[in-house]
Image (tube, rainbow, N blue to C red; front, side, top):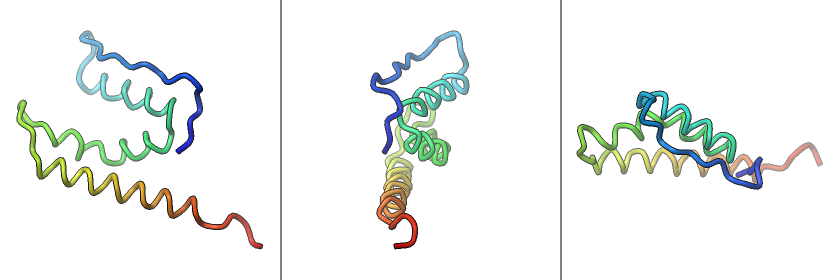
Length: 87
């Protein structure tokens, strides 16, 4: 993971914004701190949002999300471990 800022961006939920607007602002804050993690979250956002539905947590949806994120992190590590250039 890369960190583009030495100070993390602080995100606060804004009651004057819609849920969708707050989600986008959150993802932008994550993007400013860690591009790879923001990419993983964006790619799995629907699975993340499905975890809580009408105030109830869905443990199966949480497990599915976790599997997707672990898979994305494993792929990120595998790509980082590949040799760069032809030696």
